[in-house]
Length: 610
Image (tube, rainbow, N blue to C red; front, side):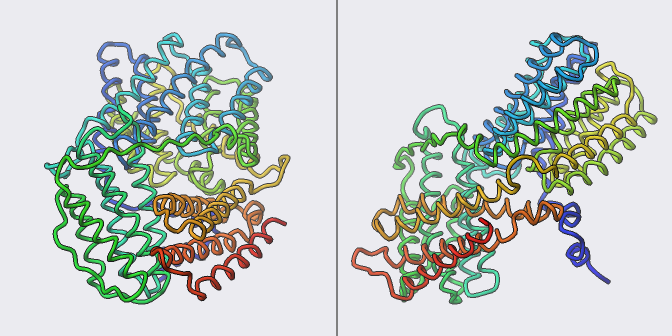
């Protein structure tokens, strides 16, 4: 009998992507936060002001979608900035509605929403937090302009912010289950992220010389990215303020040389003794417990890679055994790269234009139909046009299926247990389910559909399950059509931009290794940038490859460029390890491989550039 994975491999890529879901343990702390997020709505219903609880519940729902695993400090930006954008959008939307009036507007509203979509879409292309901000801004503008709530615009914005702020407060205050008691629970996300880096180093060492070495190296790069993001959130002061925090930063920094040595050893392709991975595993356990690592088994210093690994273990052991209070302050590195420049790049303009056309087109159709819930159509298109949610055809299929299932479930709930209390309970259950539902877009759509339909009834509007299905199907058709229109400019700008960034980062890293091999700190930062840019490029390539064929073929040849970049970065890392000692010279074999990889990259880059 064929397995689900074998069946998925025979399906078209866009359909196979729609059947895939993320896996992992249930985030029970996020489930609890999602259920408690309905408390402002419950308070408003008990106070006989259910309409006041609707903006708060919307803010909590959108914050719940952004409430992903990670550190508390990172959640401040991940939840807080989009909430501010959504609050501003709700206020702008009510102001637009007051200026335009309650009649049909086939020109003014589509024009305004299109302009906002152009700006928000371009900014959304600059990063995940910016994408969430742009989406919440547009959705809130549309809801503010169309949802008939009795509360004035400023009050709606405050209530929206209060709902999102309540969920953020829960994220910052509630401890995670199972955390160690000896360390402050506010650092549990950061501590787990740093420990995962050492675990990834151990797995890469064990995989050296085997078929899974390349995948383990990519997993190590992802773990370093996640730890970097976990430690990069806001602080009250410029320097880390607690001994536990400074210690955690130092332990993260100690993982860099280990990651470099492990990458070089995996690049060499020689199997390593199992005992080599014991040291990083003990370091991971020490990070989780907050204690010292004790004695570490040292590898034989028979080549440059093993010498680098031994040196890195010795330095890490000294750092881990440093007494409490002796940790130096960690200065936060700030990035002042031009967000506006990235937003107005070719990729930003392409995405912004498609968001604008989707918003304007759906608003024209909604205004022409002229029904009570016209705002659902443009609000749905804003979610659907987001590339973060997967390939276009895949997310359209998931949206259609999820909406139908969610509307059917809500109709059954209302028929069996009517009344405001049942609606509040439904909102709480959907909020609790959202952290799990976000692993698949169809399941997330079903949960959001039930939640939105419950809020519509609490807001005083008539039941609209069937209307919700029709609006979603219209939005699916609109986004599918606009997503494949031959708009001005070439397609695939996002893939080419990501590859271009990866190529530039690889060249910067190589130049630094050859010209300043003694600058270990600078080399580590450039290596992180190179691998992170490569990961972003591979994500963009995978997303494009799972689109429908007319779109997927626009990025043909990109995988060859990414493979060439990866081989160049891995070889550069091996060269860095060889040049780690002042008197060392680059072996001829390494120099030859560098030249070969540079030529390979130049040939591969010429293919998609045509």
